[in-house]
Length: 228
Image (cartoon, rainbow, N blue to C red; front, side, top):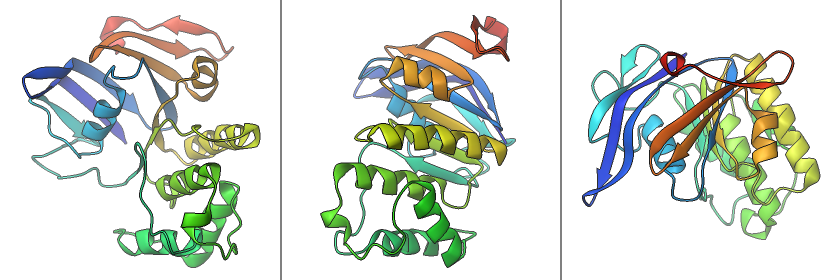
């Protein structure tokens, strides 16, 4: 799996929200997006998931052009902004509903394993509306990673998580990489973003302003422009 953006721009109501984005990302790594609120991180994530079209430029997923060869990435899981679930259904039932819509659904045992993976009780009888904010966030992460999709997009996954949840998120990123997934995430906590990521793209006012790569020794080095 590879994701390539070439000269991608997006304008909404005559205002540019993404400008001339060119980058390449490969499977088996975590790519962090760093930037302030309104910098364009979430818009770029939506675009890579096929939820919005660029005004110019193109996006290629696994060698296929989005909006030409395919409508959406062939295998994608996403946590974007505030996910919606059925209020009266349990966490397990909510994942069952989502799983039924998948092109390649997983087994009930896999659903239960995913709930445990994010620190939720797979036998919890409580409906979603009675979940705490942290539990709701964990369920959103579970929905995104269920079945280990080839492309996983996580917008602020550590929001509302306690310290145990943040540690779990680190383990989840390691597991996703081990499965060969391509992970794209954002996080307001700069230190946490650096812990979770192998590469970081800095975004400001819809433009890529820098890119860094983590070395085997854990140090961060600037990437050459031709490598972005």
